[in-house]
Length: 282
Image (tube, rainbow, N blue to C red; front, side):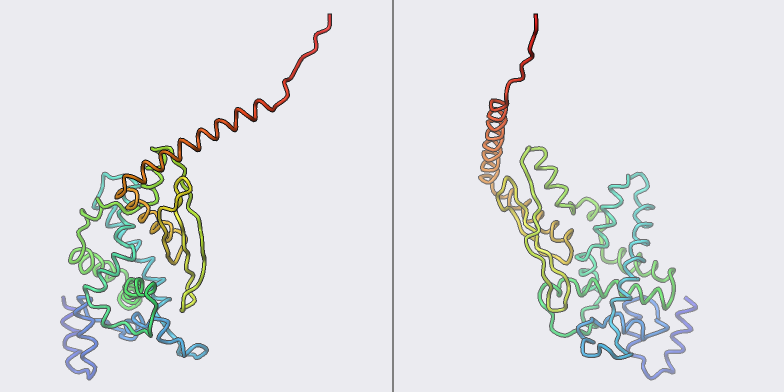
């Protein structure tokens, strides 16, 4: 409280009041090193033309730092909140809080979309820019004000004001595990096949995965990692199977045909093997 009062008095004598007030509204406290926060909102596409120059900066380094700090604080929060839950539940709940979709949502709600500097991006990367900037902002807070202020921002401004943690904890997020569990229960064959690997306009790797169940294409997903593309493909396959009863019957029929063919192959293989005989001498 005293710190904010002192900073408010100092701000009265500054000419650049506007950016400080803007960040005060977002953070809940005044920044000290304004340059760090400005860097947090510079996407690499914006400074592409500055490559090779000493002042070339973007928010990727701050994003790296913020990602680690966010994971740590959320892990502690989940651990303390759900003190009787096991590791699997805690891991899944933390993943739901720090996933890109959640960070995009919070970033937009607190107004980060109005601060980011970038050039034209493709549709795929637009899905990540807000979440990346949010993590970079946490990195900036850590370097400027320390871990205590990071924790305060995440718990008070992110979680308390914008997220329903109990509701999120109940939501299904690992569609790959859920889909594999369904295929094991129904004894059908599943395959996650990497069908394409490329790069976007910003030289980021793009992975495309196809889910095939009993050799039927049930879903395709694209993402910036193999894991992400598999999750998106699994989600598409899950909804496809859930919404179409006919596909379930087709998969069951294909499974039975495969098992029957496998059984016939084994019988034929045994029939072709020479019979071992033992000579007995009198």
